[in-house]
Length: 159
Image (cartoon, rainbow, N blue to C red; front, side, top):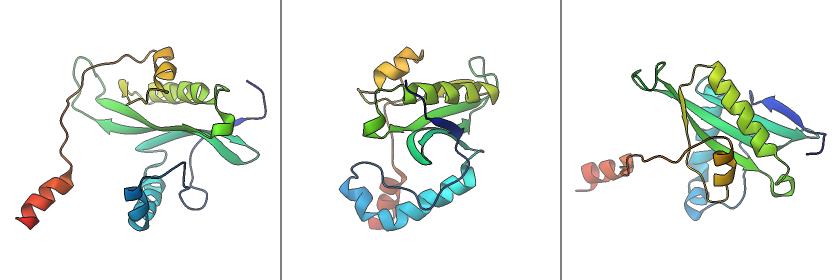
C-alpha cells in the first residue's frame, strides 16, 4: 500500500451526513427524516455506543469502518457481556484494493479488545467475505427471524 493516508478514530461529523454510493428509492424517499436522525445518532453515540475508524487523503475521508457496541447478560462465552456489531465498512471506489479496509478493520478489532468487547459480529457482502475471513471471522448460525416494529404498528393501528 502506498503512503499518504491518515488513519484516525472518528470523533466528529464534518458537515452533514454524506451520501455514499447508490441509494435505494426508499432511502431517497425517507431522506428528509433519515439524514437528520443519522446526524443526531452519530453526534450522540460517536465514541460511546458507536466507534469508527477512517482513512483520509488530503482531508477527505476515503474509507471507513464502524462498530456499534451493545450489551447482553454476561455468560460463559461472553464474560463482559459487551458485544460489537461491525457495520459501515466502505472504501471509495478509487481507493479500493489498497488494503485500507483491512487496516481499518484491524484498528477496529484492536479497539474492541481494548474496550473489553467479548465478541464481534457482522453481516458480509459476498465481496467483503474474503476480508473478514482473512481477519479470522467465522460463519455461524444466527436466529433467522426478524420482525420490524413497523409491522407491529401497522397491525395495531391499521386493523
